[in-house]
Length: 131
Image (tube, rainbow, N blue to C red; front, top):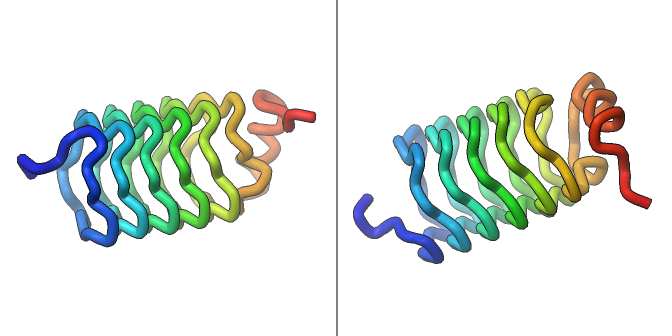
């Protein structure tokens, strides 16, 4: 994994179950990457392109996803506890079954993502839709 660095092009690659904890992947191209079951705890994914990425069961606890593009990403049953998703693009992202109630969702368009009803209600209270 020595080639992984900020801004790296990792699109269309597989990292199933990989240990990527704490890596600085700011601005990385992870478009359509397969990150199922990977551990990205505390990773910096600020400005990363995660469009159409598969992140089923991925641990993104304490990860930084500021300004990340997660459009059409599949992140079912992922863990977003204490993650920072400020200004993230979430159009059509599948976030059903995730843990992310205690994440920071400021400026993220969570209402355009597929969410469980319970999480949707919690986010609507704490991070209401911007008008």
